[in-house]
Structure formats: C-alpha cells, structure tokens
Image 1 (cartoon, one colour):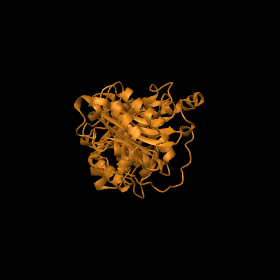
Image 2 (tube, rainbow, N blue to C red; image 1 turned 60 degrees about the vertical axis):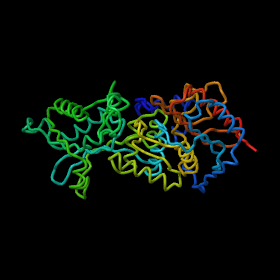
Image 3 (cartoon, helix red, strand yellow; image 1 turned 135 degrees about the horizontal axis):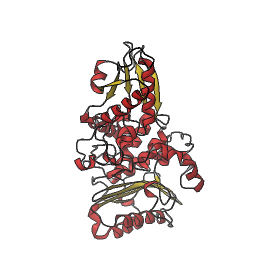
Image 4 (cartoon, rainbow, N blue to C red; image 1 turned 30 degrees about the horizontal axis):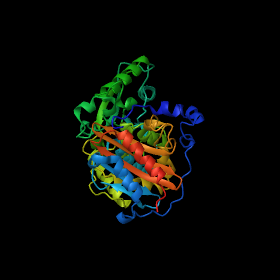
Length: 428
C-alpha cells in the first residue's frame, strides 16, 4: 500500500515459526531457499498479432467503459505477450514502485546484506555513531551504544563525572529526509516518516517523529545519567564528513555494532507489509547514495542494464508514496519476468504478499482458485490502485501487472483479470 503499514521486523520475524505451522507464511522466510543457478534471460516477444485473443478480449470486456483508466500486461514464462491493454501508458504506480527498488537492492546488495549501526573510535580519540537506516533500530540498542561510549570515555568512577563525553552522530542533512514531492500531509503520518540513518523504530510512533535527532538525544542523555555520566551529542553532516575524511581508516576501531535483520526479512517488510521506510533505505543503500534523486537515477540505469523497457519511466522515490512516479504495466511485467530468471529469484518471490494468506493480500481472493497461487505487491494512493506479481497456473507462471489511475471497483476488476489469466493460461 502507498501508506505502508508500520510493522517491526522483530515482530515479523518473531512470529514466523507460528505462521509457518499454520501455512500462512512459506518456509522460505524461515530458511530462505538457496540461490538458483543463472538462467538465460528471456527476451520479451512483442508480437501483438500473437496475443492470446481469448484473454485479451476477456480483459477488455471486464474493463468495459473504464478501459482508459487501466493498464494491464500479462506475460508467460518465455516472455510472450499474452495480453496487453494500454501497456505502454505511464501511470502512477503507488507501492508497486517497491518492486523496482527491492529488485535493485537484491541484485546490488545480495542475500547476506544487513544494515549496520556502529560506534567508532577514531585515532584522535573521538567517538562517533554511524548508521545505515536500520528500520528496526530499537531504544535498547541505542542504550547499548550509550553504555559503551560511557565505558570508553569515562564512567561514574571517573574523578570528573560532571564532564560530558563528546559523541559525534553522523546524519543526513535535513534536505535528504523526505523526497521533495512527498506531500506535507503525508510527512506527518507514520507511513511518511523522515528517512534518516539513525531512525529509532523507523522514526515513527503513532505518527511520524519530526525531529529524530532530538529523540535520539533524549534517550542518550537519559541512559548516560542513569549510569552517573553525561553524553554531549554533536550532529555531523554525513555528506560533509564523507568529503572530509573516511568513515573508518586503518586506525579507527569499531567499538560496538548492531546489525539489522537479513536481506530476506528487509525485502519482506518492504513488499509483504509495504513498509515505506524500508523501501526508501534499500533504494539508497543499493545506489550507495542517500540523495534520492541520484539514487533514483541509479535505479533507472539498472533497469536499462537489465534490458527492461523504461519508456515513460520516472522514479522519484523507492516506496511509491511520491505522486511523481510513472511506470508502465509492461515495464513492471518485464521486471517480474527478469527477476524470475535471476539467481536470487526465490528470495524476490518470497518477499511478496500471498493471495488470501499473508501481507497486504491476506484478505483478498479467499476461497477462490487464486488463494495461495498469486504472489504480488499491492499499491494504494487516492485514486490509484495497483497490483503486480506472479500467478501460478497449470501451464507455468504468468507475470501480471495491473495499474488503475481513476478506475472503479479495482479489487473486483483485478480478481477477474487474475482468474481469466489463470483459466486461459494455455492459449492456442
């Protein structure tokens, strides 16, 4: 969903064994499948004359007079275009944008990737906290950093306990906290929280934490005082610090480190639960650049390098909350096809919601042939509904993308299109 659910990774992973026993979540998230061997990338067979006419006509009939508001593309496992309605029209994708940013992150960062938060001691004796945007960074973890800093710079046994310990905190400048075109109203909600490197509980409580630095300072101060010490937090601009000196030179010591959940859990949080903060961090880390405009450009170039059509593509963020994003259903279907042939394809598919079983699809298509057979990503903004994913059929996978900008009864339409794609999977 565009307004991504705020779900803690720790809560998500803690419940995985119980959900696996009930069949609501696949074992892939408990013990991710081994990467597959690289297969040859299929080429997209754009042959309109060879569309599956039965499926094409059925979809057009389902859309009826609202056909102009929709873009729908269906591909088979070989890249053959089975159905395509307005497939080259760029539209607002809402949270289907996460399919693009998470594919980019998985390919660039790999399955073993974790976001790290570290306390460093530099050769001059200065202490510094450096983070990478762990969405599940907790108060308890920050308290541990404070305790280690006190132990390194002094403690209650020190002869001058009133002298505060100087602690540098490296953070992004405020202009990087939100994509520029995120609406001001969205920024106040939990799903639109600022994107920072040191983000306690994803910078969200019941609403967005608008001043993450002040919250961090309060927790560090409170922890230090409980131990009879004092910490003086000094904010350092990450960009300026990067230009002036490296994060960790030969003589820099890592005093303490806290790692995020592994990549498969980060992907699942972004796609299954549509967590905006996680998707934004993954985009930036994959691009190795926290300027969202430069990160978006890197993501676009990555798509082009995969041989995926980018006509009309416009990337403004990693989560889909921006109304400035534009993508075609054909681009999304091609991306799904490409990732289906990726050596880490199983991780990508396992990150998605499942019809009638889990994530943002858990309440949809229950009791229908789609239950447990469609893995996908939803998207919702005002006037926008999207759904793209992998449909299991008797004749192999079908890669389906549906984008509605202004269409009515989208859930009903999408269900009918998926059922038709399943029923007419084999086409003469």
